[in-house]
Image 1: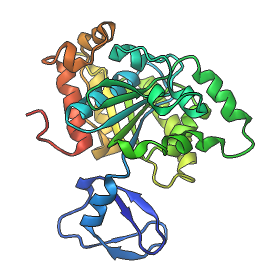
Image 2: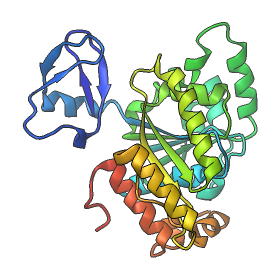
Image 3: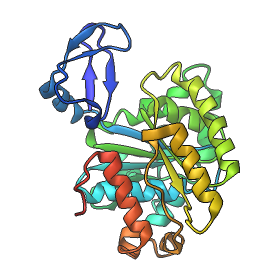
Length: 300
């Protein structure tokens, strides 16, 4: 959902459930002036501006790609048009979806091929801009730019974003020009956090780095923290989960329980909903889709 300030034309991206009942006016964060809350024009503009969610954390092995793929697939199953953008050199999103695109994000940004040739339809309502080894070359292209390199991704995705309701961006571990580009484009960040001490340290470092981007991308916010690999039998899992809930409150999503089916599904080129629809992993990712959409009645 997008609200546009009539005084300074600043767009503010918010979720439907963030607006309390009875509110008729809002205040612009940019110019600090109040303006009426016009739901009709707000909903109309939302059809032209998708929600842009980056699945990101500097640390690897926390379930970023598993989350990006299954969140995207779940949103598509719910009837939303979804674009999954894979910015990782490993290109595992395509593997997990059982597709092998001949082109992807690099060719799209360099305009070597048309949009139709780079966008791969992976499922009903779900399209993929795949990653892979060519992403390393894309990093070099960005590095060689004298200025504006941090907006390379945004400048190109803007060409097609109006066709989608959600743009989900899978990221690689570490901090490089690609993740900077992602955070200059995204409005929301979903951070998977495996329930171990080292990941908590990685979360703190990532948030420090993200804050430097927020100075320039005012719409960027940490919207969701997703605990992963949750095992009730392990005492430290419960302790770390409690600590996260104390620190981040409503930003915490229901945890993704440890489930072997989640690791088996990619070998079959299937999402967890296709491979084992009744398992804990499928149930937990359905809960995530409900949280993101704000629709608790989905899949019931």
